[in-house]
Image (cartoon, rainbow, N blue to C red; front, side, top):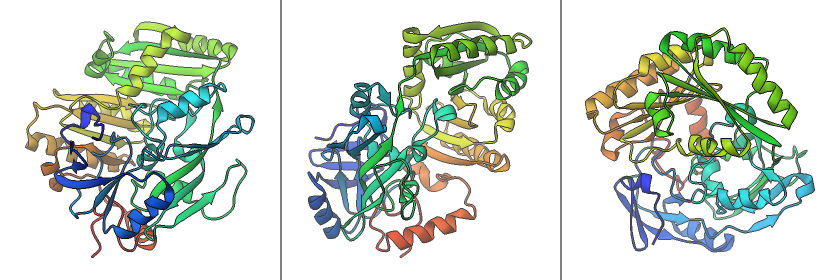
Length: 419
């Protein structure tokens, strides 16, 4: 029986050795090594990759019959030269196990992945998930320096290397990051890692609508260098147990102790001229529960629909204020201009579709894009699942055709079928 993430039970249903994704029931195969994985790939007509099952709501609904390949048995640690600050592991390793291993050497991968005990490294890279620390620490594209993948011919291909200063060959590491498994199956990854910070702190404060633009402008121009800058509406803040006005802002710092202490004092001084309320500082162990809550808030229990929009930070306050309505929870990575909206069941299909289309249009106007991360399968044909198509989509489809000419991997999930 496949372990299912509770928040995706409507998207994923399992029966014995089968899994149903958006209405398509597939047999499940579980390779125990790369050789057996290659045989499965060669013999299958369509392949739907599985990691921890935490991100299967992304993409168009699958339509072609095939097999789901569960890669969680490929979870060995290949090499960990801690002094070089790199690690090589198989892609089925969970994020939680990876972070525990790194913590034993006072190191970490500073990428925030919810449900870390279920999410696999390969699945997290394929969906390019990132959380609050993205603002200061970057994304998986900044940490994957070597990658091995199995292509449509069942042969494992390697790119990059196990050292940081490696520039040999094409940068397939970045190509597979965020490709949703449509170009091949990730089997092994080499990551560069970072030392654990000496101290972490969160500055929490609240504001009303009138002060939001000024507050965000001040923080974007701050002398400090936060690792996270989060903006929550009242409903999102309440889900974390925070009592606030219309908006809650959380500013995260991680560094050596003197640097964190200086930055906290500096940002507090910069905020004195702004109409904010409820300023509170959490440091060290006191900040950990709220950090954890921010990461897990990336997935909301049983949402009707979840979207992720990107806009220029200068457009963020106008965008956020225009979106607020009953039944919509907003969790915004304000430093990066990433807006996550979680729609709940009191909205009708017509209302949800109208809102999502409005968000997609605004995102494109503001220099960004939209992705639907979770939605009912029967709504997807009418939704802008991958936002508004732009010029780069034609290039991406050519890459797909070159690396997966048989359209074996996640067919139709990201691009329309070519046949």
